[in-house]
Length: 221
Image 1 (cartoon, rainbow, N blue to C red):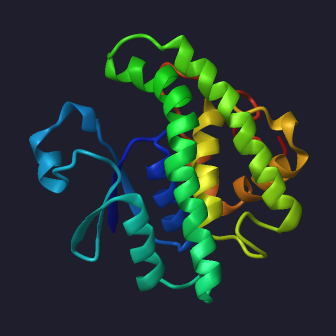
Image 2: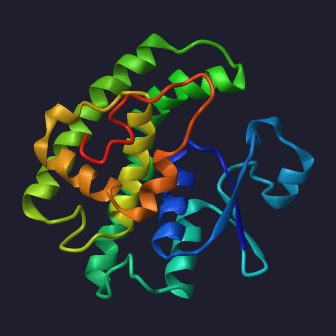
């Protein structure tokens, strides 16, 4: 069985978990306190980052590389388009969420509210929280624009781009930092994606000291 070293609310870990589940790959989840720099974990990934996946006799790190490996070795069901233009658009949007959205929103909301408490590194920076709450509105509006032109974020089919976005938003939704009333299109998109069987384990996550809102695991909001 595959083994994934992860942190439950990490959007990068969640993206890999969604890919594994969509492709029906059984995986053992091992929660890893990577910030403690345990020597055993550092041997798995000297970068001291999660996720780390053990699969096919290999240890793999970096969520984008892991998801591409899964796509190439387990192509069904496909999470990338067949045409180069479509694949470019998926990779562009994954970069948008894992870089821009992560820097402007996730790191300023989730990391301030949750990670600092869990890691015992201080209290939330109110300025960062305020900036993150402002920035997410812009990103939700951009997603609305995409969904006004497409069935899914990158085109007519669900792709890794949707999983990347849903991984970040689900982590933020756990701490009630997503205003689902801002966009009916985004809310409908998220309802569709969180209704998939691949989302079940994510909706079952429970973080000690943090209680999700009632709608978090409600497939009908």
